[in-house]
Length: 104
Image 1: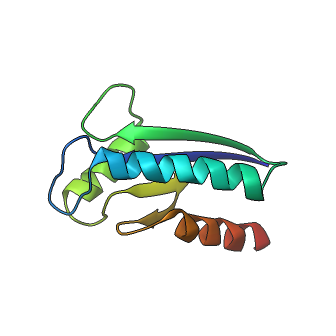
Image 2: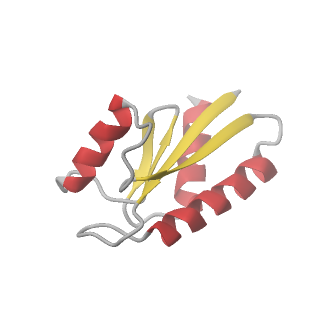
């Protein structure tokens, strides 16, 4: 199965946000976990800097707007455009979400 995973974060702290370093760490951990737990699947991970407006889709801009408005928190992780987790999360939270989705 093919999965497109986006991790959204900021290069500078903002209200209800964490720094990009936390999002980078989460992205690195997710990449390792995906390879170890789902070696037969195809994962494409992208770290999206919410402060850079280059090459963002309408979907990306909408999610960033929701984070800026306080409706969602960063880091935010999407899998195939579905929100897997946001806010105070770790890789295990995303892995549990993915396992649940795969069994549906």
